[in-house]
Picture 1 (tube, rainbow, N blue to C red):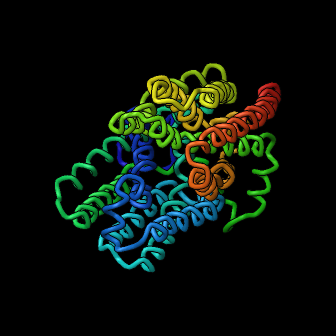
Picture 2: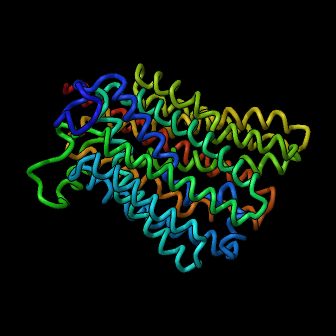
Picture 3: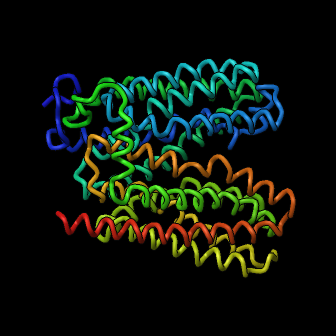
Length: 423
């Protein structure tokens, strides 16, 4: 059977070769890492980007916050779109649309125009593209294989993020004018994202059962059905807590600095925590989840994170504790990244009909990613107000979310057991 999508007609994962299935998983996983890089470029190239745009710190932060708000608004509709349109259509136009906006962004326009671009990227990267993120993986495997596949997917996400990050850093370092370096990076990203769109159009097949052909337009009934599906709300609340703890891990970087840790070591640890750990945590925990169920695996990750948070709180804030803190940060990163990488897996264990799986994934996203709206402003304000003393308060808050996450996962596990008993 030909590898090209158009020659296949409607297929299931059983009709695809192993190579084709893995190609699609890698394609979507790469996309999930690269498509959002332009919007979050400030996370790595803060000063060059600010200089290039000629904006203030407040402007730069407000642009990303504006995108975050747009993202939260579009997460649920993106899931609905994923149940009404072909994955190939959404992936192709999501990538291509984002690439076009990235090329415009590369002109380093006015702040006002940047708001327009970031709002547009909310439409292309979230409303149109995001629904493909989980559903394509699900369409490429059996229900019980999903935890393993999504874990590997996040490992690919981390590896690609690391590689693209290093290439971007090399581009900026090679060009002496900061604004020109940023422009080159954005053009490079636009080309890669456009290429992913072309590959999606050529190689992504039409899957059987991926859309409800009898449905017309958008249906509130689908969203209501997803909400009413036993366990979905528990899974969404659990993901909210997992994502909060995962995002809180980013504050271990300034925490290490506050202990007097060497700045180069802090940078290396931050890189390992952000990308390197994902190469191991995603697939390792995906395999474990396939054996003992993802809900139990995520619970274990949160319990481990809770223990480490307790150690952080009692650990003296002394330079002599720096090496111990570094080791704890790496383990904490493993636990939080691992939980996040398979955080959507409980959805595959709840018996959700494929025709509304995208809607359920959208609901998971709109609830689960809400911390993006408030967590950084909240924690940043605490550090501004209390200095180094704020870290123990942050760790305590993180511990509360970890405990809540364990409870929600326990409730989700009860629903999973009922589903398995019914089968």
